[in-house]
Amino acid sequence: MHGYNVDVGVVQIAEKGKNGSVSRRQLEVDFVCNLGLNRIYIQSAYSIPNAEKREQKIRSFQKIDDSFRKIIVTRDTALPWYDENGILTVNVYGFLLDQTILE
Image (cartoon, rainbow, N blue to C red; front, top):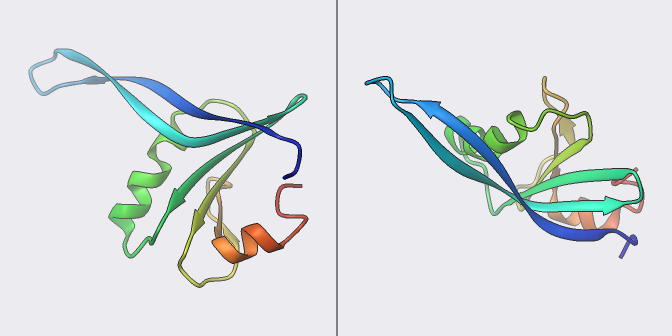
């Protein structure tokens, strides 16, 4: 709609277990949108009812080491807001109807 090429993203992480062994895992980013040198990462969630669900959604964002925009789109009815990490959380209707949301 806005001219972006859209892909699914994967973030590779390595975690150290209690016994000291390292395990590798992949975290998914629902949408990676690219337009020229601009990139936006988008996670989608039907609802984010608690801090645990929010942490699950932003975990992959926290492992991405760049300064591109990161957005969570949810069905929850709330005004758009940025958290302390600069991650925008927005309602799906605002995301679809606000022509400036990706700017």
